[in-house]
Amino acid sequence: MSLKLKGFTLIEALIAILLFSIVIIGISYLITNSATYTRNRIITECLVNAANSAIEACRGGKNISSFNCGGLNISININTDCSSITIPSNTWDANCEDVTVTARYGNNMHTLRDMVCKFGGA
Image (tube, rainbow, N blue to C red; front, top):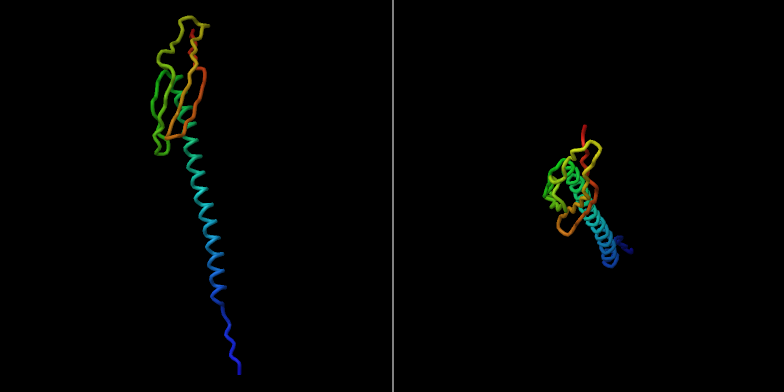
């Protein structure tokens, strides 16, 4: 009577462990890249929002030097004094200034340039 045992050999088990490890490493790589991409996208979005807010604040005559976005403290640099852009005395005149805003967070930077104008009123 021959007794035949069914099961895996040591080589088959080692190959299965190797294949499982390769799949797990690939999945962890995808998760890590996804998290890094999401973080960079959030930082870029905050930089754009900070620069837009600085331009809008400048239209209101205020200089802002920082902007808080999602717990990130964005540093803002404006090339002009926004309070110096005054309303002209003549009704049809305009006082305009070319404003450049640079928003920075770590090594990331976003620059926005716009014309800020004040118009004479009646």
